[in-house]
Length: 315
Image (cartoon, rainbow, N blue to C red; front, side, top):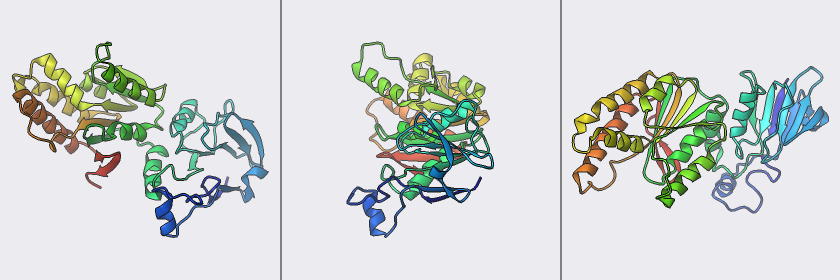
């Protein structure tokens, strides 16, 4: 099946006429544009092939036996029962996790070609689109380790979730304390994280970081290393004696190095603020900074997230 995409943008194109957003305006100034969606399959327009409507899209078949799943804008098309597609055309900017759904059902296999369509100013520019598609089209096989650093409310957790959105098997390791009703603000934060995560992600609420890394085979999102460190410092009494927790740090680093999974870990960048006024704060800062450095040295990828924008720490 030969697929030619002559245009992959939304109905108004990209940039959209009259739009002055931070995505459309730079494209217009550079004289760049992407045409509204037009797809040829084996030389014929997509809408001229036999198709069956499915929720959210079309199941398309060609004379030569090829099969394609097309998704409407902002929709997650449901595959036909038992279908394995040669290609899928999806609005991945709206719902990248639909790829995980299709992979879990077997509708998207290793040979399936994946195309993003209905692209527009929901993404900043073509470079950011390519970056995201790099995570979604062909999720890396483990082992692969990514460390995402950032300050409070920097967007590091959202970036971690975006990177793993298309993986069919994800374990979310929540290392922070469970809401117990005594802190409504903390409960709201935890609830917001839960709402963002796909429903099929397996959540583990634990400080057993090394054990999860050793046992996992799919993808793992660790959120986050700062709350993990605070928990194990509480458990070992390390606020008074750093040596009490160092064996657990060494165990975590060894498990990170030896994992078979695709791991994305979120951690706080602690080296950009003022020196903490109390000893416990300084001890925590020093230990987390040390842990970040050791994990970064054992990672294939690392980035600093600032105002929602990831800055790679090396190519």
